[in-house]
Each structure stands twice: as structure tokens, then as C-alpha cells.
Image (cartoon, rainbow, N blue to C red; front, side, top):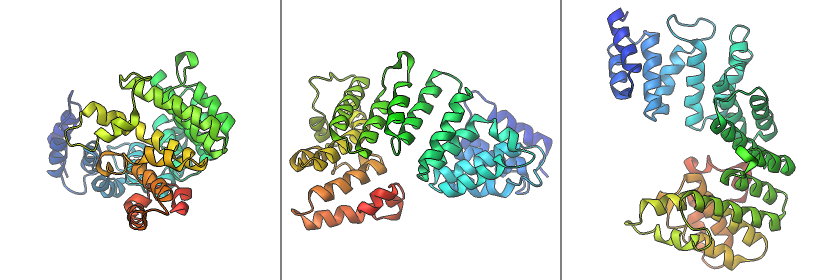
Length: 335
């Protein structure tokens, strides 16, 4: 067994003002493999370093609701274990672990009163495309006031509008307006409302909401909304010496451009769709995987008759397992 001094050293390292998570993991490695406290703490240290896949087996080994290890919080272990699965895209496993603890005779009440558990549960439901269940879970968190401040409340409302955008346009709009002080619509709120309008095939409204979302995005990044050409900014990103501020703007604006291209294509403006997508296609390494994959799907649709080999290349990209896992069922069917 690990000595008291070893546990004290680990505890002191975790409680430091600026914890060195790599050092914490090294301290844990000096303890026996059977030491639940050390394995749990190392798992958390790995998670803090963005190493969810490496943390998962450590946390799984000490996650036992029937016979919890002494010196550790079984609910904390279960949450961290589920979070590992969530971060690696194993949403079904994450949901199963969370629902088991929420239904547990001993730990269920605590789990249902834990905002972190409930929020992760809602996010797992959303990523599994169980949108009504995700919305209901988020509404329950908001109704119970289980958030620390207005920023966290705004994030919950953003997630809520994203869930509603998939099945209830009116509630999507309503939740988007609840987002911030003074009921000002946020970038995420406008974008989610636009997604809801697209689902409803109200492309006129979607176009207006996407323009609003793009304006809010540009404003947040310090650009003049009236004079900034987002296509020109995106074209700059292909250069290796593109300023970071421009890259950050385009990264955040790219989902809007992809949706604008979809609306243009759906309303017969293929040239407009191609203009929006063309500067995004060279940015594979500079955009989030899901955004770039959606751009490729739209690009393949726009270019379906003009460049077979390029279309084939884009579709092959999105069929890679690690990329396809980031697509919704509907996007996969389009592919």
C-alpha cells in the first residue's frame, strides 16, 4: 500500500495554486497499481492534460458503485469515467454510466443534484441525437437554478436552443432570446435559431438569422460588420503567415458560412454556395473537424457535375471513421 506521506504529497500537488498535472501523474506512478486514490488522481491528471483515452482504463478500474474504494468519491469517479468516454466520442457508454448512477439506490439522489452530472448527461443525449430528451434535461437544470452565474446560464441556454433547433423551431427561438442580460441575442443563439429555420425549410428567415449570427461573430472579434468581407478573410487563412486574429475569426465564422452555403444551394444559388465554400476547402487543418466535414459534404453537392474526382476526394475524407463520427445521422445519409 502507498504510504501516508505519498498520499500527502499527491494531495499537496493537486491543491497547488497552479497544479502541474504531469508531475501529479508521476507522483501517482510511485504508488502501487492497487491504490485506488492514486489511480483516480492520475486519471484526473491525465484528463486535465487532454489525455482522455489514457485516463479511461485507470478510472474504469476504480469505478465500482457496488464496492467503492476507500478514500475516493464514487460519484466523482463515475463522472470522470463517463467524461472520458464523452471526450473520446463514446457517447453511448457515457450515457449508460451516467444513467446507471442516476438510478442507483445509494448514489442516485446525489447524482441527480449534481449540476456537472446532469449537464454531461444532457450533452451525451444531444450527441446521440436524442434531442427532445436533451432539451428536457437542460430545461430541468435551468428550472432548478443549477448554474453558478449568468455565463453558465447563457451556456445552458445556448445548448438548449441547439437541441430545440432540431425539432421545435418556436422553442428554439424562445430559448435563444433568453440567453443574456437584456434578452440580447447572442451569436450562438442566432446560429441555433437559423439552424431551426433551416430544419423548417424557412430559408428566408434562415438567411436573415445567419446574417445576424455572422455580424455578431465579426463584432465579437473586433471587425467592422458593415465593411468586413468574410470570404476575403477566409481566403487569407490559406496563407501560412495569416494573422492569428484572422484565423480565429474565420474558425468561428466558418459554421455560419457552411450554413449560408447550404441555404444558397437549397434556393438554387449554386454560384453563391460555391463562393462561400471555396475558401474553406483548403483549410482542413485550420477548422474544427465537424465544420470542415460539413463544408466537404456541401462542396461535393455543389460540385457534383463539374469535378468528379474532387467530389470523390471530399466524400472519402468524410467517410473516415474519426470524421464520420462527428457527423449527424442526416449528414451521414447525405454522404
